[in-house]
Image (cartoon, rainbow, N blue to C red; front, top):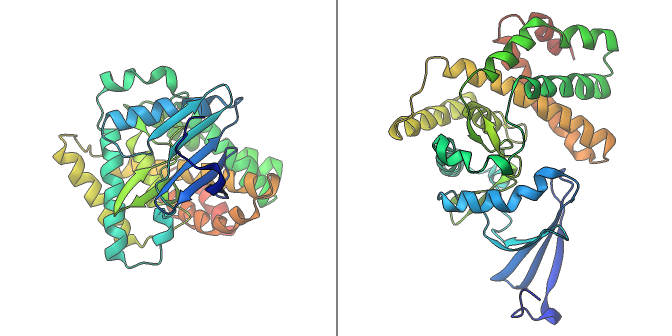
Length: 317
């Protein structure tokens, strides 16, 4: 109905099996150079409804994302541009010279999002999930304790509750919630960045909300799917800071501290998700990323004061 030029008899439809989303994706191809993606989303999940508004918002402000061709909100269907099959993750075995250029392109896009003025961000407020606040940071922590330490590592209830109640964790959540917010992607990792003609495009941005820029940066630099060396990570941090300064944004003195705490939060969230996806939803392949995520979390927590009991536990599991 909406794409009359497509010859139905010649169409090839291929399900895209990727990630842990409750949405279903289909690649629809008529020819090698003519195709699109069909997204079927769950009408009951609120954030799925906002994908189109966010995509149009990103395009309006020059941030690369798939073009929206048609949206049928009654059926929960979206037809979007097919950007190809190569995400940043798929380049993980290339040389750093190749990967670095792609990472920098991704950072260029996220910096555009982080740099949008508050007046511009306000127009999206009704289409976004709840902002990052102390309750959400505490939820991420609990998600980790309940699902990763509890469900995956079988840590007993009393020990989990003791660690989850550490004053340092509550203080971290409260501190992060007190800081000025910008718009963040919320799941800015290698599998949500498509590389097309050498340029990065953002996908899976329906969780976008007000939060800390350092959370997105930590999501990419401490991405459990990809192993970055300390030198590579440091190079990307310098790049991010330099671009922000060029845009007129100030880099405050506690940037490194915020990045470490955000890395802790993000990794807790990821570890909780891997346990749920692998043990409850049957996506066993997510469990293979737990060791890498745990190593990064162990390193992050070791640098944060008042979390010694948690650091000791992570050193043992």
